[in-house]
Length: 268
Length: 89
Ligand SMILES: Nc1ncnc2c1ncn2[C@@H]1O[C@H](COP(=O)(O)OP(=O)(O)O)[C@@H](O)[C@H]1O
Ligand SMILES: [Mg+2]
Image 1 (cartoon, rainbow over the protein chains, first blue to last red):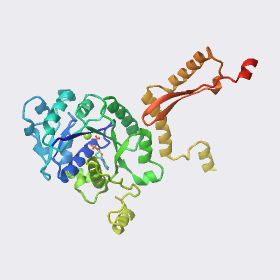
Image 2: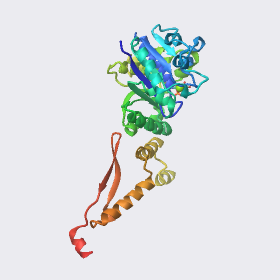
Image 3: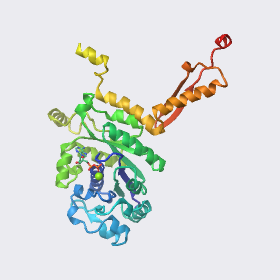
Image 4: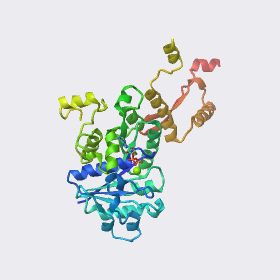
């Protein structure tokens, strides 16, 4: 077994990296893969709460790197999925406590026993970003259909190419189909044309994301949520499956739900 | 009438379309690390250098950044001045 290392990053903050990491890890593990996710956002730890594992943390990434514990001791097992683990970020240290070669070494140690290693990157173009992409085999860039997020995504995509970690693959998150329809939000096609990269998924804006995050239960486990479905689709694409892109033509409102009732499996 | 004024001032363009056009320009300059002002200066200097060797009509020159995927290239189209006018001028 040799894990693939997938780093989830972005230029702008708050676009959905942690949400995507938690959900892709969950979706992959729910399909039976052995998955470990690493929170590389040192000082701004969040993946633990999104996964609902915040009460079980004893050791963190910096403890591992600085030799205060063994790797196994810092791996928290998920409550629901026995093959999903989290290595949390340190909360009281800064990004300089870890180096890119530390991350490469850590992942090399994990590769043998897992199928997937998912790394949640901090936003930006500095040390934390370099740490997160150093061990990556695949880099996913998350953006929103909005000018500043797109501009910053372009910058980060250029850096990923410069570090020879490309081509980056794009996740467009928080699409509001009704706004796109009115011509008041960039469509996925617009964003793709601007950034000229491969698309790996489109995630609609979905209240279920907030609700499930409140519960510490990733939305990918919610069979009925559109965002959950979109994340499960990306997980399948990472596995090499050809999965058609979900239609972004309705907001999941009454008519949308009706359409899905009439045509089960349609729209997906 | 309002509608007409809106069109006149380009205000009836949907915001997504406007965003896309603005981003196209911004990304070209971000990627090449070349501001619109610097590009203008480059054009002027290029024209003056070339004019030292051949006769050209500065107004017929086009120098622009073309894109192919994520690749950018500077494309210059510099027509020679037609022979007839060259002799006359
Ligand atoms: N598809 C979505 N629909 C609704 N809310 C979302 C969606 N994706 C992310 N969010 C919300 O956006 C916020 C930022 O997401 P997060 O994953 O923490 O971003 P990042 O890790 O990039 O800073 C969170 O409150 C999250 O719940
Ligand atoms: Mg985050």
